[in-house]
Length: 480
Image (cartoon, rainbow, N blue to C red; front, side, top):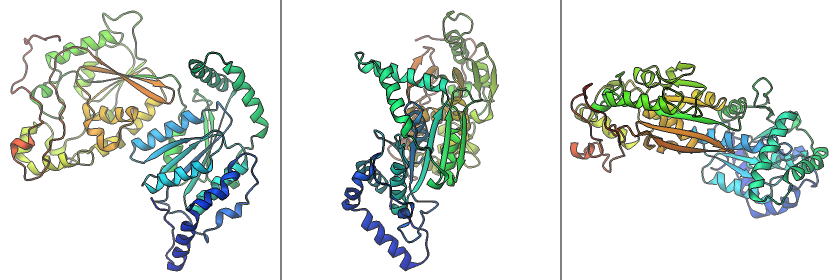
């Protein structure tokens, strides 16, 4: 993405473009290579104003985020949390890890990253001195990029816990090194060199990290625009290092059996069997004494999710934002009926399932925005069971899997399966646990032919099989 200048003067715009062309060649990086170390010569603030007063475009200019702080203050965990959230919301963000400070190679990589159409670069390093930060400020000023500083600190208890986590991680790599001593000596050596950020350095967020929300604090100065505001929102929640979440769709519903979408149907006999099996897995009747027990249970407001957790002990809440995607005029219909009544709508949805919005209903893009608050609430807790619906859980699982937005509608979230998500450093691992209660398959892949002029056979080629009549209460439940 080329830098965009905010000016209506053709001569001024040309001057800015010429300046960008001069600064983007190899000589810029070679001339500044030695200046990116901690002991470099200071560059005056005025150097950042070399582009004739031009400013980055408020809407389209890329953003460089620079982390600041001593080791073991939570910079890396927060950097990846921010990048994950922005990417999930449709931005193109990447973390650039550096040893101490950004280098000339880092700046080259960021410039190339932005030229490919990406828009958020997060430099995960220490940047302890004003000199090291000033060179990045100058770089962003000359290239017409937005720049945001994030300074991290933490209290003594949080620091000890962070050091313990870091020692455990590095101990797995090499058990012959006293990692705790090395980390503490590194902190003692670097602490006298740390120069806190000042208000003169530009837009800034300061984070005092703690897992306790009463001690975790965030302040901001000069933050502007939707992306920077989103970053501020992400950082406002404490980062909990060890987290486990449980996700499940409701048990098979009567509408699932018939191939109908949406609605507020009750569970089928096999769905009720799954509810019993799920309860046995998560602290309900027949569960193992040392088995997992969720501290909170969140469901949608629809009957099939509430019935699914009725035998699982624990505080619970029915949350509107966990309701299934609103199918509008297609609520309660089968795919065959949608093709018969609205063939063009059916084709348009297949062409772009992420952005397509049902008439008088929702799209996956709408849904992603709706569940943002749910994801943020999850990240501030642990041991939460969420029982919801296929489309909703696709959007939530996309966050933990790092799935691109266009691929979200095709994440497979099968019925009668428990998904366990555990944090692992700044990443997450997903364990799939089928509970072996037979059910219909509701997963539909994108058909090859998405044209509005396709035949009915082409439109329905990937529709999963379903029954034409409801399952009776006497129908035996097959365990497989």
